[in-house]
Length: 282
Image (cartoon, rainbow, N blue to C red; front, side, top):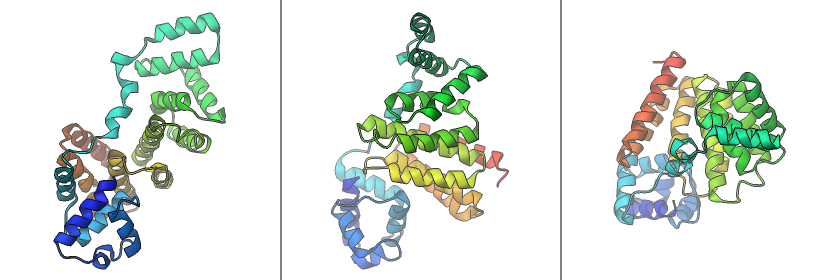
C-alpha cells in the first residue's frame, strides 16, 4: 500500500535512523526513497527485512500503520470467495436443463461449474472435458478463470500446474480488465502453489511463487503478499532451511493475528500442520 512507505519513513525518522542504514543489505537508497514517497511497490519479504533494519516487528508496523490511517486494511481474500458461497449459486439443475435445450459446450461447462460449486462430484469424463477446454483455450477471460477456480481441486497436481501456467500465458491480455480478474488470477496461482507445497514439489512451487510476484500489479494486495510470504516459508522448508522457513510461516500468522483475522490464523495453522504431515517434516 502506498501509505506503508510513509509510515516506514515516519518510524525511521522517529528512531533517528538514516535512509542509508535503513536500506542497508535490502534495497538501494534511491529505491527506499521512492518507497517512502509512495512511488514504488515492494515485496513482503523485503518489507520484513527493512523493518528489521529499523527494529520494528511486522505486527507493530501493521498496527501503527493502521492507527496512523484510521483503519485496518481490508483483505481482498474476502472478496474473492463468492464462487464458493452456496447462497449465491444457481442450482446445477438449472444449467443442466439449459444445456439439454441448447446442447452448447458453454452451457455444459456452466453446468459442470455449478456442480463443482455445489460440491457434487464430477465424473472422470466430465473432469477431462473441463481440462481439455481450459488447456485448449487461447484467451482466458473471467469465465475461464472462474471455471478453473471452481474445479481446480478436482485435477491432479500435474494438471493444476499445467493449467495454471496456461492461465498465466493465455490470460495476460485480459488480466488488467478489472480488479476482479486480477484477484481471481492471483487466487488461482496462490491456491495452485499451496497444492504444489503439499505435494512437496519445490520446483513447481518456486515457479508459481515467481508468477504470483509478477502478477501483483499494485500495492493493494496485503492478503496475497502475506500468503506469498507463507508459501515462501514452505518453499524454504522443502529446500532444507527449516529455521528461515518456520520464521516466515510464524511472521505470516502474526500478521493475520494483528489484523484480527482469527479465521485466517486457524486456516493457515491447519495448512502448516498439513504441509508438515504430507512432507514428513518436523
